[in-house]
Image (cartoon, rainbow, N blue to C red; front, side):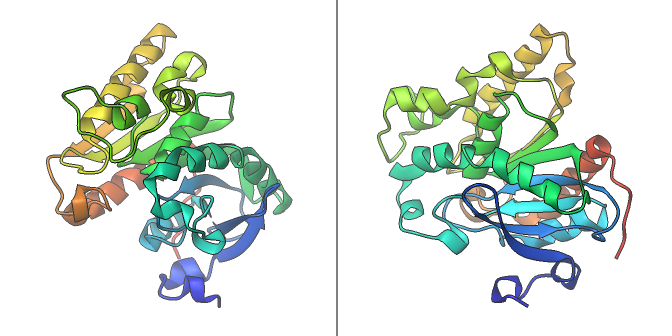
Length: 274
């Protein structure tokens, strides 16, 4: 067993493989409920400065529900770690690089004997990974649902706040922020189910920035004749998590349960308990 899987729940270790996928050989934790029955799969992206092995309890719940896991190390993280993630000035570059890797990672799933159902793909992430997920959904895609945590789709209001906003510690080029800002690219957004989980006291990614994006997204759904309630939101006044950003503290069980239920509703897995 790889040391990277040490300490994970047995139900994950027995079903997980550490592989390299896509054109850039992205380090990936790939797990399947039984490696035989075609199952939906979720591409999951972690936050800045951590790695794909974070929070394996999440993966255990997905697998029990019949949902496969494709968790990648973002550029500069985990098995391909370097100094970039330690400096928030590199956030935009990391988002951009990760965006260019997603499609080839998804395409590579097809080599696994059809056990990952390409017609039931989900995407999600937390913090920086959630930003990548939301920006990817602004372009043509085949994802059926998305779930994001402690993130924002309004990068302008995070990185370039007005006088009433919290000052970001790093100055970013406004043109580059706009290029990568999901809120600035909603014209091609397809109305799929989206779940948003957030602490209203988040000290790193203020809820106000994501609340603004949720409003814009629901307007987009109305414009195309879709139900804005497809954008599901659950927030907590505070959770007790570090900086109200890293996990959901005492609310983590509810958050994980809500996410599993969301995937089950929208990706239609065949239940698997093991």
